[in-house]
Image (cartoon, rainbow, N blue to C red; front, side, top):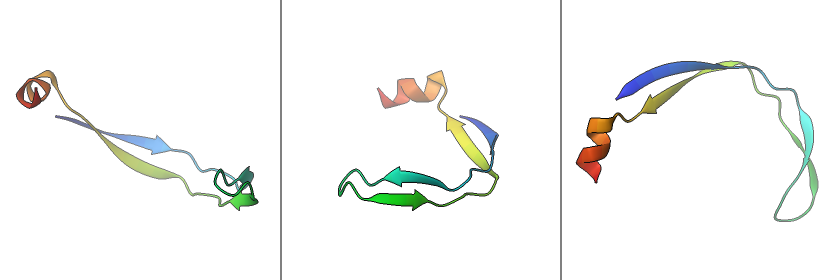
Length: 49
C-alpha cells in the first residue's frame, strides 16, 4: 500500500441548502488540516479479485 499525506487548506463559512428539506443553512468554517491517503497497489488489488 502507498501511504501519503495531503495538506487540506482552511475553508470559510458559507451558505448552503439542505438537500433533504430545502432549508438554507450555514456550513461551518474548517481549519487547515493534514489528511492521510492510502492507495492500494497492484498486488493488493490482485489478491482481492
